[in-house]
Length: 356
Ligand code: NAI
Ligand code: MG
Figure (tube, rainbow, N blue to C red):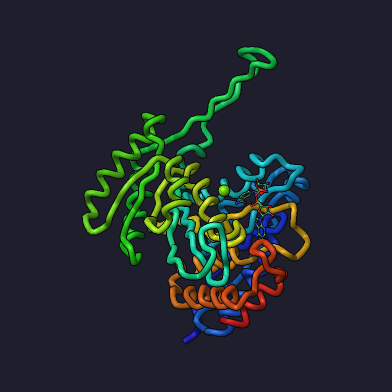
C-alpha cells in the first residue's frame, strides 16, 4: 500500500531555528525513506524577524488560517536582539499557539544515554518525567495595560492579569491524568502558588482535587512552585507527570531540561488534543543568537520534537525508532558542544540518520 502522506508546515524562524529545523527535516525524510511507512510533504513559511523587518509583521496577516490546512507545524525558534522579544514571541509563536488553541504544551524531561548533567554523573539513575503546561491562558493570557498618563513620567503603572477558567484548568488537568495512565508510573504532581495567589491558583487546586478523585488508579500529589523547583533538583525520581500553569511550567521545564544536561536537548509539543487544528512541534530553546550561524547548535531538541510529531500523527513505532537512534548516537559519544562534545550540528544529524 502507498505510504500515508502528511502535509507539514515548517516555520524555521530566527537564529538557530533554521539550523535545527533543517536538521530535523533531514532526519524525518531519512526515516520516511528508510521505513516506507509514511511520506512528508513540506511547505516552508519564511516568518520571523526578517519578515518583520521587511513587512512590519512577524507572519502574514492570514498566517494562522494558512496553517489550519496542514497536518502539523514544525517550528524552530523566534527572536533577534534588535526586535523586542514580546513582539517576536506574541507576533509568531504565541499567535500560532493561541490562534490554533493548542492548549496542551508537553515537555518531556528525558536523560539520554551518554549525557551527564547536574543530576546524573553516570548512566545508572532512572529519571524520566514530563511537564504538562497549560498553553492557552494563565499568566500569558495577554490581559492588562500600561498607563503612563495617570501618574505622570517616572510613575508609570502596568497591570498584567492572569486568567484562569474552570474549563481551562479542567481540560489540562484531565489531559495530565490521561497521559499518566500511559506511563510506567501513573502519577500526577500538581504545581501552583495558591498560598500567595488566592483566586486563580485556588481554583486550579480545587479543579485538580475534583479531577484526581475521578482517577483512583493514578497517584497524585501537589506542591508550591518554589518548593517544586527544589524537588526537581533534590527528589526528581518522585516525578512522572507534572502539571502547571503557563508561566510556572515554562520555568520548570527549562529547569528540567537544564538538569538533563542542556536546554538544547529539550523537545516539546503544543497540542490541540481535540484535533480541530494542527498541533505544533518545537524545541524548547530559543533562537540562541550567541551561537547562530556557526553550525554548532544542538539539533537534538528539534529532532526529539520531530519524534513527538510522529507520535501525534499516529506513527508511534517510527517515533520510537527515531528516539532509539538519538539514544544510540549520544550513547556512542556523538555530542554537540553544549553537552561537552565537539560534534557539529551536521555531525550529530548524520550520526542520528546513520542509526535509524
Ligand atoms: P535561548 O534558548 O535562545 O538560549 C539560552 C542559552 O542556551 C544560550 O547560551 C544558547 O546558546 C544556549 N542554547 C539554546 N539552545 C541551544 C542549542 N540548540 N544548542 C546549543 N546551545 C543552545 O534563550 P535566550 O538566550 O533567553 O533567548 C534568545 C532569544 O530566543 C530571545 O529573543 C528570546 O525571546 C527567544 N526565545 C524564543 C523561544 C521560542 O521561540 N520558543 C523560547 C525562548 C526564547
Ligand atoms: Mg521558555
